[in-house]
Amino acid sequence: MGVKFRNVGVIGKYMKKQIEHLKRVKNAVILAHYYAPAKVQEIADYVGDSFYLAKVAKQSDADIIVFCGVRFMGESAKILNPDKKVLMPDPSADCPMAHMVADGVIEGMRKRYDDLAVVCYINSTAELKCKSDVCVTSSNAVKIVKALPNKNIFFIPDKNLGSFVAKQVPEKNIILNDGSCPIHARITKEQVCAEREKYPDARILTHPECDAAVVALSDYVGSTAEIIDYAKQSMAKEFIICTEEGVDYRLMTDNPDKHFYFPHPHPCCADMKYNTVESVLAVLQKEDQEIIVDEEVRRLALLPLERMLGLAK
Ligand code: 13P
Ligand code: SF4
Image 1 (cartoon, rainbow, N blue to C red):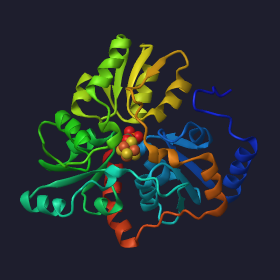
Image 2: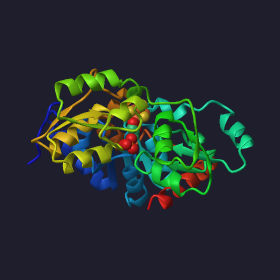
Image 3: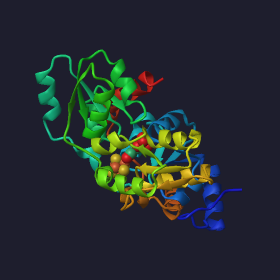
């Protein structure tokens, strides 16, 4: 039996039944990110971090993918699956960081370095992916950057993930771009220390989108899925979680005997919360919020995504 926690209300039986029915008759599948509301994670067929969801989207044999995340995730699913209908419960759910590369910067950097590789965090627009050599996610960035033959790496758009990778791969010259996630950037060293004062035995688990000062305090740094795995495997009973609060649902479901604390104020990605059970049902009924990517853009953006999937194996 499922365990119900904090923000998980009871999903209307009728709504759940309708969603199940529509999924069956339309051969649809629901993918949700760990930051989506708990109720949405409950009804999803697959829940995971960005890398896992990109792989699931690529391997799926469904005709319709309902993507409960933010725009770049739905867009990546469409780029990988041109023949499938990719729907988003609310296509205005966007990741502000995905746009944070100034015009002309990539072109300028390419002129400056002969052997440059532009490494693009998957949290980016399709247009930025088109200008990049390879995509990465937080769970495979270190591995992929290490595997590249290039010495000079322009890491876009996230300076925090970029500087985390730079520390793990000192043999490369990693050039950072001035972009970051506003939600993770709001988590401060002081907030984390305040939690540690209250819970001195707690392990600090952090997403690499956090500021370097927060990363430096941490016992473990990883993607949302890696944080969830670490907490499950660990013998520790208390954890301070430095990422978006949506991971709370899986952490608590998997570990009813452990305690999870978030910095105050709790980090919350408002765009991820646009995904609701009601909007999932509506989009399955109407099939009206389709992600469309221009074919030329799709073809170019596919190359760095495919290269990521190959190098991350
Ligand atoms: P993950 O790939 O770790 O799930 O991260 C996605 C994201 O948007 C983090 O803010
Ligand atoms: Fe983007 Fe940050 Fe939201 Fe992740 S948490 S989707 S990086 S705004």
